[in-house]
Structure formats: C-alpha cells, structure tokens
Amino acid sequence: MIDRSQKIAVLMGGMSAERNVSLESGEAVLGALKSRGWDAVGIDVGPDLPSKLVEHRVQVAFLALHGRFGEDGCVQGLLEIMQIPYTGCGVRASAVAMDKIATKRAVSDLESVVMARDAVFKAGDPLPDLGFPVICKPSVGGSTLGMSVCHDADQLKAGLEEALKLNDDVLVEEYIAGDEITAAVIDGEPLPIVAIIPDSGFFDFEAKYTKGRTRYEAPAPIPDEVALHAQRAAVASYEAIGCHGLCRADFIIRDSIPVFLEINTIPGMTATSLSPMAAGAAGVDFEELVERILLGAHKMEPETR
Image (cartoon, rainbow, N blue to C red):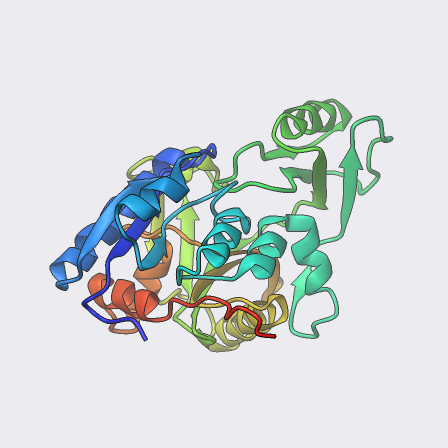
C-alpha cells in the first residue's frame, strides 16, 4: 500500500527524442501530487538514476517518461531490481507496447481488434507491396516521430529512409483515412472516447504539440456503437498485453469500424493531454487521476527459497 509517509519521485525527461514532452508531463504530475499533500520530488532521468533514487531515498516512482529507456521496460526493470514500486505497466507489457510490430502481433487474434494490413521492412529489403497510400512508422518510438504518409514509390523510399534513422525495423501499413479517436483505459476500465481533429488532417508531431493546430472533443461525437467497439478493443488489447494503470489506445474510424493503431503505456500527463481529458469527461479531475495512478504503483515480489 502507498501512503503519505513515503517519498515519491516523479521520473521525467530521460534520454529519448520525447524528452521535452516528458518534462512537461512530469512537471504537471509533480504539481498535482504536491497539491494533494504528497512528499514528491522530480528526477530528470539519466545514467545516474540509481544514485539519484538512493540519494533522495525514493520509496515509490511515478513514471512520466516517454520513449526509449522510460516507456520500453528499461526503467521498469531497474526499479524491479531496486524493489521500488512504480506506476504503469510492468517490464514485459512496456516492452511489447513500445514496439508497434510486437503490439500488432500480440493482439492479432482478438475478435474486437481490427487492424490495417501491414508489412515489416528492414534495410536492404525489397519495397513492401501494399499499394498506395501507405504510412511508414519506426517500430519503436512515439509522438509520430519518423512517421510519414507515402503516395508513391519515391515517397516510400524517402519515408523508409527517415524511419530507419530511428529504428532498424519499420512498420509499413495501408493508410487508413478517417476520423481519429483515442480510448483511455485505467485499471481495466474504459474512459470516454476523445475525438482528435487536426487542422491539417494528419495528427503528426506538429499537430500534437503546436497550440491551436488540433481540436479535441470528449466525449467524442460518434455513434454509441462505434464508441463501445473502440472501448472494447482498447480493454481487450490492454488485457492481452498485460497492461497496468493508465494506458491509451488509438484508432482510426473506417466505415464505422475503429481500426486499432497502437497502445501507449505512459500517455501524456499534462492537464490538457488526451487521457486526462477523457478522465475529465468522466468527472475525474487531473489531481484525482494522478493520485489514482500513484496508488496503483506495484513491483514484483522477490523469489523465496
């Protein structure tokens, strides 16, 4: 059990391309915990993390990290070894969900989860033959970094080259045109659907993080049966991967069917981020959401002989 006598560290920043986004999430979480009376400190994660955890006598870690070394199971494994409870998914679920290819394979047998056709590309492979348009994504990463929509072979070659700068494996999918929505899940329970409406029509890095470039609506103005389908698919993928705490699954609606894109195990956590927005639509304010996530912190128990 987590109680107010314990020292809480909000782990943020880190060493990934999403560092700046993580710092924003971390500062928002830190402020929320302090406003609720928790003894919390922020730690900017780097190679010296173990010594910082010891220095601050950390007893519980709230993970506000995004991307590599924070969302992929690495920090989770370190915290398990140090026997420090932490928020969010465990090592295995974090590693699977961080890899878009592994995620799709993990949920491929779920009846409620519909996905786009895809191919996996490595340097030196022939160009994938899925027709056009397609979308290229580094298999590991977030915030749409290295992602591109390709309408012909030349664009595909350029998109693959760009994605390969970030990861050795590239996921190439048929491009799904439609409305984008996101379905957050906390402790296995779905939150209201959020609609994502970018001015450009494509929810890329600029649309995500440039103020005024994207509108959001929660609950999403979509038919109830579509919302329920997305929520069922989000919960099914959450359970299949073995997620914990707060996660967020993204979808594109094609012909009234939510097409699954990915699941995020440490979604953005500013007061205006998508998951807090979904929680707000359910009557849960930001500080309450942060505290609920904290109270779900966990660790593995050591084996006994």
